[in-house]
Amino acid sequence: MTANATRVLVLNSGSSSVKYQLLDMADGARLAVGLVERIGEETSRLAHTPLATGGAKREREQPIADHEAALRAVAGELAADGLGLDSPELAAIGHRVVHGGKKFTEPTVITDEVTAEIERLIPVAPLHNPANITGIRVAQALRPDLPQVAVFDTAFHTTMPEAAARYAIDVETADAHRIRRYGFHGTSHAYVSRETAKLLGKDPSEVNVIVLHLGNGASASAVKGGRCVDTSMGLTPLEGLVMGTRSGDIDPAVISHLARNAGMSIDEIDSLLNKKSGLIGLCGDNDMREIRRRIDAGDERAALAFDIYVHRLKKYIGAYYAVLGKVDAVAFTAGVGENAAPVREAAVAGLEELGLAVDADLNAVRGDEARLISPEYARVAVAVVPTDEELEIATQTYALVSA
Ligand code: ADP
Image (cartoon, rainbow, N blue to C red; front, side, top):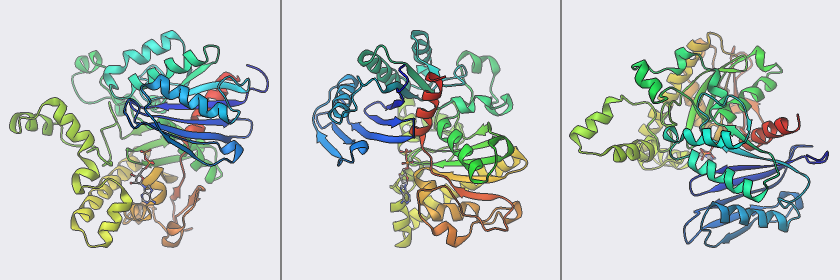
């Protein structure tokens, strides 16, 4: 790596999409951001914004056959702004990898053995890890000489004690099939818990934080002195909170009940719980903005969906309060957490005895900065802390390759 190589390309490869950001770690500046969607379809779409040059967003629809074609198109867009992948200023490529199992507890420089291990984890992450591996292979082909780093969604949660990580099922069966609670959104939980400590003027080791990452997918975590001790997602991102399209916690007997009584196949049940449940299953919408609009118009189904969402959230706040014993802050983040003031207000309502309260005026303020929304008298800080998974992936990647 040359001395002035300070740029990191962050790639988040999904099954039919690639999200990317190019950052300069000398100052944390974002040089370009973009997204390729509907890879493999006739109507693939590429949106690229060259922030470095102040240029306007460029959007194109064109068939993009596969991930290789997608990354080549991204490389072409970057090159057009003088930010090409062949630049000596590029220090590394950081890949978001969803499932790192028990083994990957840290960001890791990708070798053939690392890719093989990510491949071995496909049975526990069938939707995500194959796409992540494709992204890695294509990026390696484009720049074989450049360090590539895997940053795992599960890594932050590997500090969970066995009491939180194990399901209460037969141990031999669990171990034979790697069944345990891994947790996801770890990059966000790590970043937000640290930023929350910063907001309180403390070191992460001094504070206990409950992080509520509420996006389309949603998860809660209990972070004790900077280390995760419990999180709501499990073997897969289906467990825990009510999400946009996922059920979160249900009685596992619902699955055998549906198989026996509704004649549904395992794949149909999987699809029901992952894609047709949560807010969309309850009321037909998964966007919190639309749900609030319907509630304001007197829609009862939307109101019930909101209540179920908030009830689950409140249960997890209570559970993690008990897990931590003492809580310094509750931090709301991601699309819903950062923007939906009514969700924050309702989730904390009635928890004054636990030292939790939200100030209505502070809660109504909108902004991109981390901020407190609890009144001064409250024992526990309630905060809105915008997440930045790409910055965190770039920071971890750069720290590893520049060490
Ligand atoms: P993802 O999990 O896809 O990364 P995000 O963290 O971007 O999701 O969150 C997306 C969700 O955030 C949307 O589905 C919507 O419910 C919610 N959201 C976004 N903006 C707002 C807003 N202004 N008010 C309320 N909810 C919002």
